[in-house]
Image 1: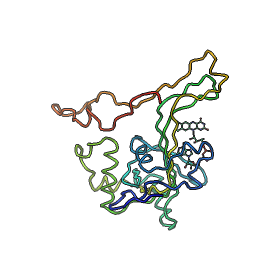
Image 2: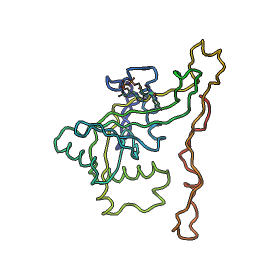
Image 3: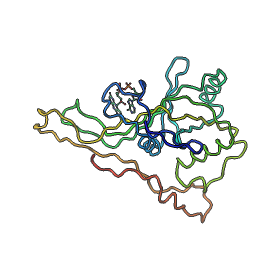
Image 4: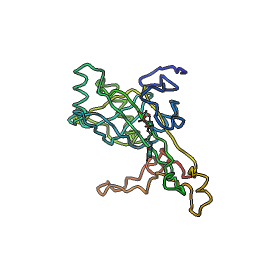
Length: 244
Ligand SMILES: Cc1cc2nc3c(=O)[nH]c(=O)nc-3n(C[C@H](O)[C@H](O)[C@H](O)COP(=O)(O)OP(=O)(O)OC[C@H]3O[C@@H](n4cnc5c(N)ncnc54)[C@H](O)[C@@H]3O)c2cc1C
């Protein structure tokens, strides 16, 4: 495992994550990647994540916005939310935070095989296993909330009002260090069995891309305010649809 120098809050400590027992897929291990740069790229591209926790012995998976700063994931929500209370409880119990599993998924194409069995999807997905704690340090809170707003749309933090004391008090920010993570990906055409290839069915990949539509100004927008450049030309570029 190659090392990388860590110089600032949340900067990268690893260039490759270890393939631990719980981050190694049982099936198709060759599709798993542990390269930190590739894992981070998928985390950054995905608009949302799904946060999985166990509550009273039952699984609970919630979609939410995330942001990455170096090798830390930040998730935010209401300080009154169930999850924030669970994390606070786990900190009181001094067990190193609430065990969580954060996943993101980018679907790149529909894999349409001749056989129904070999239908699939081209994708890049990341699973982060770790422990969530509450961010309390004001400087880190600033960094995290700035990152969350910038994750929504790069350039947005300069073009919106920062949270005031009341809003910040109502916001809980969870910190999940990215130390155990895997990326799994599939690309390329369907893998039909040879006896199906000669058949008469069409097969191939239907690319999937996420894009933005035209901005829709708020109905109560002050007349004369133009759509800013970062909204007209978002820096988050969807992948161009291409068969892979
Ligand atoms: C869009 C999409 C569609 C899919 N459709 C199917 C389907 O229909 N049927 C199916 O069986 N599988 C599907 N998968 C793959 C699925 O996510 C699992 O990888 C698969 O079920 C094999 O799990 P496993 O038993 O090997 O993993 P496990 O052994 O249960 O997982 C162990 C560890 O491997 C890593 N891991 C496993 N899967 C992933 C992943 N997808 N991304 C990143 N890390 C991973 C994690 O670190 C996890 O903790 C799909 C994935 C995506 C993204």
